[in-house]
Length: 328
Image 1 (tube, rainbow, N blue to C red):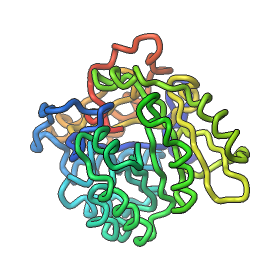
Image 2: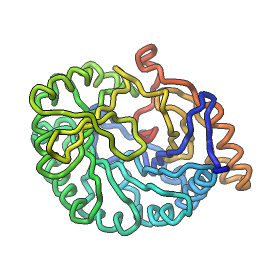
Image 3: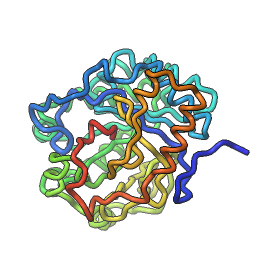
Image 4: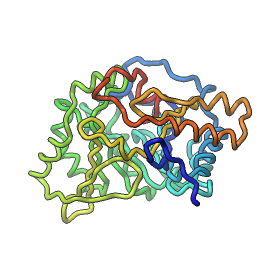
């Protein structure tokens, strides 16, 4: 039999999101507050050896998808080295990356050579001034240049992640569709989530994506579609083109019943649900010399505690940690 991890609700866990740092070179309004400096100290981050060991254990238990995240993962020094080490694991089939794109021009080629197959890039506005306001001073031109570098390096598909905020950037959705059509990118629209104080503040701009979908249907000929990957997006395609548009709806139409993932934070906490507090601390166990079989046993026991669903609607103030701390 193939090895597998199954939670109490008969969901197969096949996907780990690995945060390599909780730091970021932007300050998006829904993620980190201005002036925030309460980051984990680098000596508390898992080392590359420790990350590789944890992911090896996961892959031997049946996980075959890994995504490198942050914070902003490209701020972690020598990240392509870690990517190459993970890509060499025999059972890993899909290695991807989430980034804000600021440093992609410098690193896209090395990431591609290291085995990263595809990337998601956060891009909430195509207007330079608005982009700067959302990101705490970010330069849109750097991200667009980074996206060009990703295409040049052969990373495909490139998925654009746009957090849709009513009264902030919802007037740009059609422009983002056209941009992705022109650039051969996939577009994914995301509802705001009440993660930490910043996320709850951003949720005042919440917009049900079903409303957005009906709006787009009036402008574009949309047909049902699917797209390879381990994420929760529900896709449509613009007829006659290659463009797929994904809708990620954790609030209006949650996807907990198909959740296939867990998250490893930069400091070694294994989070079992984005919207719950359950976690298992792995760093101390690794540094105390836990055996490989002991590590796998700990992972199995952790997955056995995975909750059925988040409670973003029922208890929007429950989660106090920021998205950057969890690994998005």
